[in-house]
Length: 392
Image (cartoon, rainbow, N blue to C red):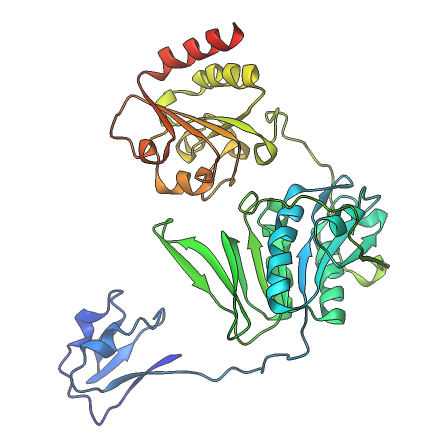
């Protein structure tokens, strides 16, 4: 798309200049000019009473590859264990594939991967298994090459991956090399049954609106999806499928990085993504030392320790504990929010929790609109009472 100004119709009235919300239109040498950065919102066109401004659609450079078929899920693994996000994506991928009347595939790259059959039990028709010692540590250069080779050979229509630290790191590289679109951090996926396109929904403008994005002209359509957005299916051990073993040729890859070591985050006693109970703290804790109180409550409950972005920004707790739009999306059975006001960005990461308990001394805090149970009070009085009661 581009902005076209008809010089014959333009009378240089200047009405389009203040209409641009980004200040990108100016009068230069008796000509209306549009600066770089225009997002084609159409405000200038609507303001021109002489109809001198139009938005021209550009033609796609490449036609859609009509031979592309199938929905694929990148089945991420760590140390040979398949991560839960893979099963969550298979659940939604199965529904998408059924709508399109096509096959669901899973791609797993790693070494000595346990329970590959579980991918079939969770809905996959085919599993492309690339097993090599070189892939054991998820080095991104190798993963990029391995996934690219499979996509170019088999031409899937849709490729889904988890919006984990690994997925966010190398999936965009794959999309860029394929010259196709990628929608990151999706919270919803559906199919436009008329156009057979993937509807990719994600929060934007700080979570204030939800945008649905299409990729009509390139294949595959690619999305990364936040963990815990979709729920896993109950596995069916009787399902039949194919495991296709694929060789990995390291010599074909020029690796630009070398993994020296992998350091586990020892502050995470229980992984947020997998936790059934989460105790989270926010700015209301006041200082880093007060997270010890929440850790004690978490230990009594066998829970994971979470936080809002405010606490992370203050340096009170590592980023790995952050829940929210710029942190981790969680879906525990119980979420206890302590001293968290309830900013939209935080709610986006925990609002699907089965039960939410909010503790805050401000009765007007937004978190109470979402919480199933609210306690208006000083968390430094409420939490110790909870710990005492739970310890019996």
